[in-house]
Amino acid sequence: MLHAGGLRVETPSDCEIVLTRAFDAPRQMVFDALTKPELLRRWFAPDGWSLAVCEVDLKIGGGFRFVMRRPDGGQVGMRGVWREIAPPERVVHTESFDDFPGESRITTEFDEQSGKTTLTITALSPSKEVRDTILKGGADGMAESYDKLAKMLGESRAQQPLS
Image (cartoon, rainbow, N blue to C red; front, side):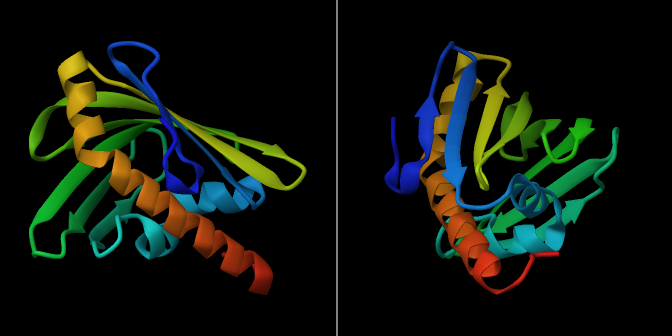
C-alpha cells in the first residue's frame, strides 16, 4: 500500500510490516532526525499531535520513551531498548506500546544514493494480531509523520545542517 508522500507499507508475512520512504537528504541527516530528541520533537507525531515526552539513550542496552499527545488531550506511550547501533547505516531496537501487549523488533536501515536516503523499517511483531493492531492504529499517522520529517529535512538542507 502506498500512502500520500510516498510511504510504502507492505506485510511480507503474518508478523512483519515493512515501511519504505525516500528522503531528499543524506543518510546522516535522516539518522540524526530519527535518533536525536531535539529533532524527533519537530516531526515524530501525526498532524495535530505533539511529542510530550521524548527521551533517548542511544547506546546498546539504552532505552527510549515517547509519549504522543492527541489533539483531544489523550496520550499514546511507547518505549523500547536499543539492540544494535551502526550510525548512520542501521539501528535495531525493541518497541512496545503502553495500551496494548506485545513487543516488536524494529530494524531501521538507511541507504544513501546520490545524496538521497531510502529509509526501510522492518517491524517483526510477536503475532499477526499485534502486527494488525499496529497497522490499524498507525499507518496513516506514520505517513503524516514522515511527511513532516521530509519537510523538516528539506527546510534544514536549504538553510543549514540539522545538528
